Length: 212
Image 1 (cartoon, rainbow, N blue to C red):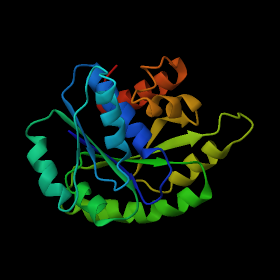
Image 2: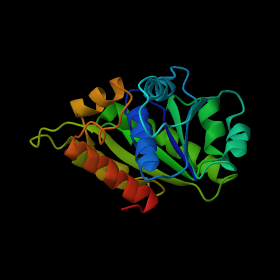
Image 3: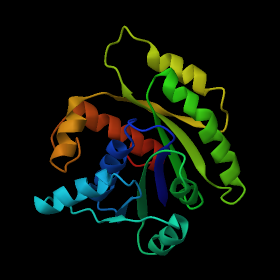
């Protein structure tokens, strides 16, 4: 199963969710490969940090570029799950990765600037269905302010409902310091013991994989 995290806008939590989801699968003793196609290489740096600290389970990670779909097909025969971090931007690499994805996850911050990017991603989704007709597309509310007085998440969900081909994940990924703290030491939020952030990742995994 190939899970792709991507989107037109950077800074929405794609790497955070890709690495935490890969760590979740690995701790469930699933065979997972993390693939970094973002030139910034943040997911690869995270995985390398795990290796440097001898953290278990080790999570294999490869950085690839160019013809992404062809390279993913080769890895797909060797691993049960492939989690791809595509970074931000409507790039040739993202478009190539979409052709192999079973699930396309779009982390979206609750802001108008992020909502403006959804139309192009929906166009890419429709274009991709011509060659990858089984792909599911999920919008994930990410980096949501913890202040309950703000209703930005509700406004964003309402706006996303105008895209019937995009399913909205029933989880809010809040803007928590623990996500940043975990990334710095090559860990997941579960591994540093944040129960609220861990529950968010579990809810996301349950939605995508049906894993409890």
